[in-house]
Image (tube, one colour):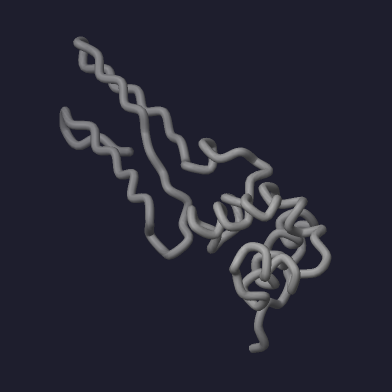
Length: 117
């Protein structure tokens, strides 16, 4: 946010890179020229335990996981038997393994290598 003369400029570019958190601003304009900007990001709209917070899980994967009983990061991280889960939800074991490592990484605040360098 900046001022240029009498104008207030607000830049809420949401996607500077792939996987970037969406940003938005609530802007209040007053008759006296006062401007108030309240900054937010889309993570505020997502339950903190939801698999939605895992990079790469969009609506379709979320629905498939939910239909198989997995709705939280903790459930995915702790799940044993990815082959059976794959058969139940229709997501490949390789993709599930990546999602599971990302879930464990979020819980343990630790970096896991997903693919070899």
